[in-house]
Image 1 (tube, one colour):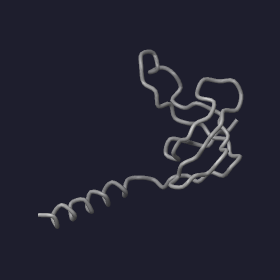
Image 2 (cartoon, rainbow, N blue to C red):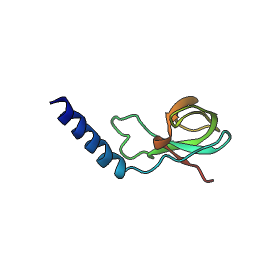
Image 3 (cartoon, rainbow, N blue to C red):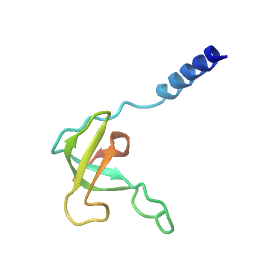
Length: 90
């Protein structure tokens, strides 16, 4: 029974990872946009990404600390994962 569960978990992991792209790598000082993670009334028509943000620290496991640049909607500083970020081009 336990062996069957482990086999299925392994197969599911392979299938999931096959369709997932590798996380982008960012360096300190890079400008990025972060994905909006709040949900609620009226947010459906708002932009999906907030930015620009500047990467202030690179943490382990594709996690980054970012800080807001300029006056726009969103948190002043936050920690986010690479899969919720994209490069910001002005």
